[in-house]
Amino acid sequence: MNNKQSSLAITLVSEILATDQLLRNKLTRVLPQGMEISHFSVLTHLAHISAEKTPAQLAKTFHVTKGAMTNTLNKLEWAGYVHIRPDWDDARRKMVAISPAGRRARDAALSAIEPIFNSLVDEGGAASIRSAIPVLREMRHKLESND
Image (tube, rainbow, N blue to C red; front, side, top):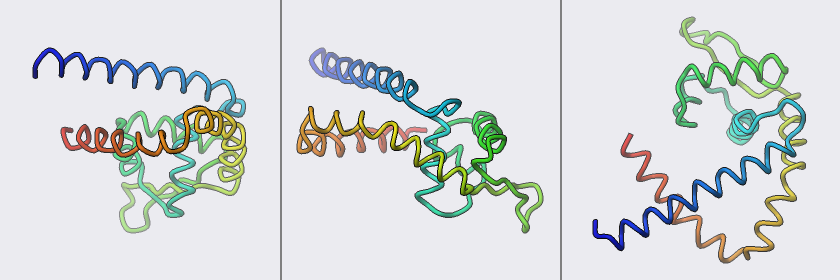
């Protein structure tokens, strides 16, 4: 990699990290009391797939350790947002599903953060944002394949 490529890569990564930090701060301030970004992410995933997943599958999806996912799931279960049951085929595993309360909490969180997302799209322009998504998605896929 030459100096121009290195400089470009550093600038790109710096912008992504700064944007991530700013977005996380904004989202954390508007999420319902007690809800963390990780909680919202897991609830959104479970609501979208409408199927049960194991904690290990969720950990892999979110690129976190099984311990970190267990911690998140314990908090979600305590809040009544997910149901965790034994896997009937393998008692060593557990299965996780979103509860009706979890769907309501996720919907409330989405309503709270939607104005932030709408503002970003309105100010940045839908076409500009749409064009950035494939680049970021490809970067994510490349990073995932290096794990």
